[in-house]
Image (cartoon, rainbow, N blue to C red; front, side, top):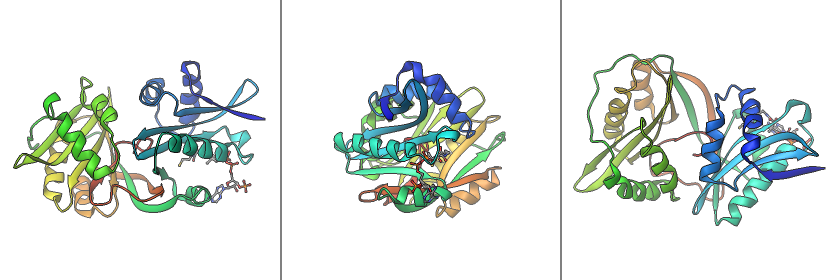
Length: 279
Ligand SMILES: CC(C)(COP(=O)(O)OP(=O)(O)OC[C@H]1O[C@@H](n2cnc3c(N)ncnc32)[C@H](O)[C@@H]1OP(=O)(O)O)[C@@H](O)C(=O)NCCC(=O)NCCS
C-alpha cells in the first residue's frame, strides 16, 4: 500500500540522494528551497516506513509547475510514478491552477501524455563547462524598486504570478539580475542563480521580437560568470541566441520537451526557463 506524504525536513537527504542517481546535481538546500516556496507541494511516497519516490510542484496562481519526479529503480512500473503525477496535479488544481507545466525527457512524453499533458516546445539544456571571459555589456541591475514591475511583466508573459520565486532569487545575495526598460516599460529581464562553482541563468523573459535585448541581457549576465560552469535552458526555436551561446562555448547537454496540462502559456515572448523543476 503506497502513501503520499508532504516532503519534510527529514526527507531531504533521501530526496537528494535519489535525485542524484540521475545526475541532477541537487543539494539538500534545493529541496529546502522548494519546500519553503511550496510547503505542501513537495511529496514523498512511502510503503510502510520505506521511502520509494519523490516529486515536487509549485503554484503561481493560475499556472503551476511539476518536477523532480523519480522513483527508486526497484519499485518502478508499480504505479508509484503515476500516483505522484496525479497527486501533484490534484494538489495544484486545489490551489487554483488551471495550467500545469513540466519539462519531460523525450522518452517520457508518452508517459506524461497518459495524464493529459500535451507536448509544447522543445528546449535545449546548454552548458559551458568553464565560461571564458566575455566582452560584457552592461545593463541596469534589478533592485528592490524594480521588482514589482518585473514581477508584473513576468506575470503577463508567463501567465502566472511568480513573484515569490523571483523575489527569492533576485534578493538573494550573490545572485544576479538585470533589466531593460524603454519608455518606463519593461522590455526584458534576466536573473541568474550563482553557486560556488556553477550558475544557472534564468528566467530570461523578453517582449516578443526583441532578440537584441535578450542577447544584451545574456551578455550582461554571462560577463559576470567567468570561470563558472554555466547552464542555460533555451527553446530550440531561438536559433540566434543558440548561435551566440555556441560562440561563447555552450554545448547541448540534453534536451527536454515542455508539456502542458491545460491551455499552453508563456507563448508570446522570448522565454528562457528558470529551472526544469519550477518552469
Ligand atoms: C519516470 C518514472 C518516475 C516512472 O515511475 P514508475 O513508478 O515506474 O511509473 P508507473 O509505474 O506509474 O508507470 C509506468 C508506466 O508508464 C509506462 N511508461 C514508461 N515509460 C513510458 C513511455 N515512454 N511512454 C509511455 N508509457 C511509458 C510503463 O510502461 C508503465 O505502464 P503501465 O502502468 O501500463 O504498466 C521512473 O521511471 C523514474 O524514476 N525514472 C527516472 C527518473 C526520470 O526520468 N524522471 C522523469 C524526469 S522528466
